[in-house]
Image (cartoon, rainbow, N blue to C red; front, top):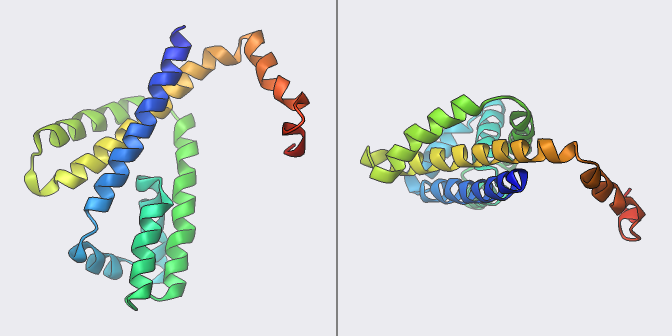
Length: 177
């Protein structure tokens, strides 16, 4: 029963963290942020780095796509740099898979603690959205850690392996393999 608890708790922390992270990033996207964003993506290399970091932090292409498309529509950002941001953001999102395998639990717990205190007490006031974003990102990562912890004992159980392989004989799944 304990592995199932880790799976349920990890899933909820993952999605709650994703929500906090995305909403924190969306609240930071005021006019001043957009002007800074245009400066940050001034070259193709910078656009790639900003895309990678933004994709890694947000884990959501919807917010980034909205920001970048509005800048392109306003003529503030060329389409080629827009494509670099989007391309490298997808690579940044993919790094989360690597972090799910590495043992970063202690680092995540420190970030979770520090950002959680900043988020809960709204101190420092001018960094409230950054605190929320970091807290959401740390929750997301801790949710992945819990999912991994819950899945490890299940993978060794014969009934779980049989359950996973039972999908191979299903008529719908045969089209995807």
